[in-house]
Length: 605
Image 1 (tube, rainbow, N blue to C red):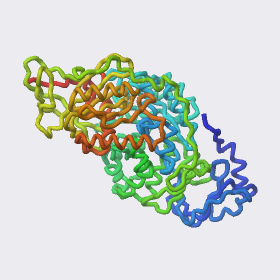
Image 2: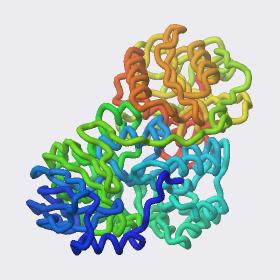
Image 3: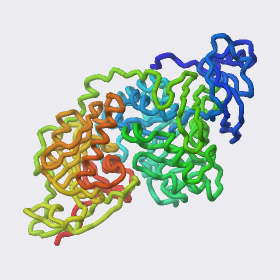
C-alpha cells in the first residue's frame, strides 16, 4: 500500500480553501514563474503557485497572502511552470525494472504519472503477479495507476501462457485501490467476432465506471475496425499512419501516439493535428515502451514531448497531449494533468519549452528531483522467492533441439520467414529459398549478406522441454552467435535468435541457470548478460546498473552485425501473436493476418 496514504481533494478541501483565501499558510509556494495553462493553452507571466496537503490551493499573480513563517519558498525565477508529465500507456516490465526502480529512473525526467498495464507479469505469475506490481506501484512518491490486464493469453488457441486471466479476475481487480481500467484489449479478433469472454471483461470494466484500453493491430479500417470500436475500447496505440490516427478519433477513441525505445509512431500520425487541423484533445502521447538504457540515457515522456515538438507540434499542444488529455481520458481531469486548484501538486520547472530541460520536479507538493538527480526514496516490495524462480526449462538444450527438419530428399526449401521492420512493431511475412544440409534447413549455408537466421521459442513455464523453430530476417547477424531472452511478449517463453545452433543452446541454458534475462553468445563465449530474476522480466537492481548492462547488450548485438536501432525491443516482440504479420509461439509459426498457424516450410526443392 502507499507509504503515506494520499488524501483526497474532498478531505483536503477545507485546508485548500483556507490557504487560497489567506486564512492559512501554504506548505510551499513557487514564486515568479510562467504558468503554462493547458486548459486554455496560455502562458501567463509572473504567476505563483501555492501548495498544501500535496495539492494545489492557489494559482495567481501573487501568492503573498498564502505565505506564512514556515512556508517553503521555491523561486521559479521566470522559468516555465508545466504540469508533471503523464505516460498514458506503458508496461513497466519492458523497462527491465521493478516499479520502484522504474520510478527512480523516470522521476528526474519529469514523469509524475504513469498508466501501466502489467500484462507481462500476468502471463508469468497470473493475478498474484499483477497484485505485486500494483502494490509496489502504490508505494511510490509519484502516481502509478494500474490497468488490469485483459488478455493472458493474448490470442487463445495460438499460444500457451504461464497463467490465464479471465472475466472473474478482471471483475475482482476493479475493486483494488490503484486500478484505473482494463489493459489493452489485444484480442481484437475476439472482440470483432463477439467473444463472450472479451466482452465480459469489457463489461466488468465499464460497469465499474473505468476505462477500457484498446489495441487494434490491423491495417483494416473497414467493418472489422468499426466492430472493434463498437465493442468499447476507448483508445488505441497501434496506429502507424495519419489515416490510422484520424480513423480512431473520428470514432470517439483517443489516438495514442507512441515513441518508445524502438517504436517511432508519432511523426507519421501527428500530422493529423499539425497539418489536417484536427482537435488535439483526441490525441495522447505515450511510450509503450522504453527499456532501461533509454530511460537512463535519453529520457522518458520528456523525450516524447520534445520529439512531438520537433515534428512541428506547438509546444503547449504537445504538453496537453502528455498531461491534460491523458488525465481526462482516464477520468482524472479533476485530480491531475494541469496546474489548477485541487489537483495533485505535480509541477515541473523548465527554462525552455522546446528543448524542455527538466530542472526541478515536484510531485504531490514534494520536491522529488533537481537537475537530473532524484531527491526521494522509492520503496521496494518484498518480492517472494517464487517470483524469482520462474524459468523452468527442464533438461539442458543441445544444438539438435534447434534443428528445423527438412523433408527427405530435399536439397532446399521455400520457407516462410519473419521479417523484422526497424522502429516498427509489425513484421513482414517474407519467403525465401533456404538450403538443406544433413536433413535440416541450413540458413548458415546462404551467401554472406542473405540476413536469414534461426529463431526458436523455448517453453519456460512448465519445463515441458518443447522448442519451436523457425526463421527470421532483418537483424543482420553474422558469424557464430546467438541471443536469448526470457522477455518475449506476451507469453514470455524464451526467444532465441542465432546463426549457430551450438551458441543458441549455450544462450538458452545460461538463462535457465541465472533465472531469466537477456544474453548474447559469440563463438561459444558470453559477450553480454542482463539478469532479470523477477518473473524473468525485471531486475530490482538500480536502474543505472541495469542500463549499463543493457548498453553492453546493445554493443554485443552490434558486434554480431546488428545495426538496428534498439534491436532488443524488436527481439522481444517476436512472439507477440497479436501484431501482424508473422510471429512465433510455443504452438508454431503464426500468421497474424489470419490468426492461424502456418508452416515454416512452404515448398520443397
